[in-house]
Image (cartoon, rainbow, N blue to C red; front, top):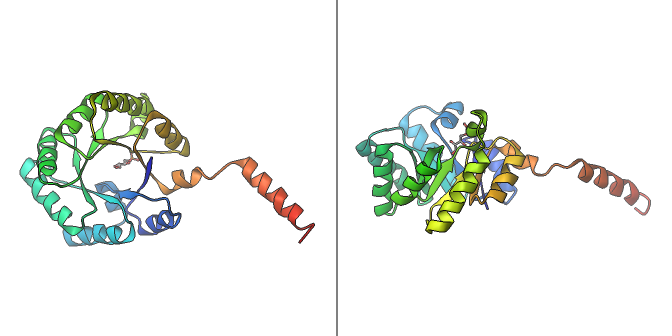
Length: 217
Ligand code: E4P
């Protein structure tokens, strides 16, 4: 399973990248706004900076909701760097745009996936990735990880090449469950990635080893 970090914060991207396990980055308009980035040039420059920091797929989300607007925005984004993946919302014009990008050799990430039917449509259109929003599904009283398993089963039966990118991850346990359910990628906040490191018995065990090491140091 690939690990992406889900942020536009450069310090967090750097910290995750230094672990040596980072395969890419996802952003969205909310994450960009959180970093205080304003204006189209600044947004494009920010994507370029991320592409130069991380050697992997970098999702940049369009904000147009019509086919022509999404294609125009996506072409500009894709021109920034070969690793840009154009992130497109799961709407009717989004599906048309994904098909256009796919036919023109531009990678896509179909975002805001909340059902298996949406995931089938995105795969049919040729999306490189689909992003089911695990945490938001859990918030609404359904089981996000179950959706990952359902999509993984459908894609395996049907032979779809689209990768399942589990998004809206909230905890380290979400990452483990998504790996079990067959996600190809997990995009995670830094805290959830670092949460995978933690186990109290590791801390207790290390403290004991270091204490005993003093006996022969
Ligand atoms: C990433 O691609 C998604 O936009 C993101 O994971 C959404 O996460 P949230 O539900 O925590 O906002």
